[in-house]
Amino acid sequence: MVAEHTFRPPYFHRNTMTEFMGNIAGIYDAKEHGFEPGQGSLHSCMSGHGPESEVYKKAIQANLEPVRYPNGSMQFMFETCYMLKLAPWAVSPEGLNTEYLKCWEGFDKNFSG
Image (cartoon, rainbow, N blue to C red; front, side):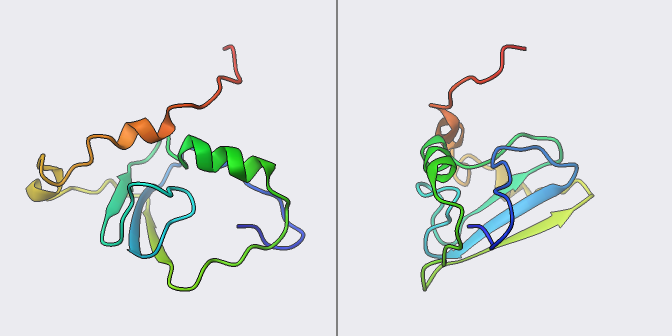
């Protein structure tokens, strides 16, 4: 999504903030697969994160023009400068998506350093 007369920010990034994302309804544009309504994701400060590789490839080739989110789609993000402590049930094997890292497979290496 982009607003008029702006630039497309880089998708894959690190923050000094901790981000908690939640999906209430619909499909989240940065993660089209595996982020179902009712799920959340936490990225602690300075941990790399961003969209899955196929979403990134589509986004960098898209025209820079306003895009309307589909009706029935709602996500949220909380940011804080604090580290968050998770409840034991939140990190239990039953609640973790063990396939999460696979969404970043398929990125081309663009740097040699």
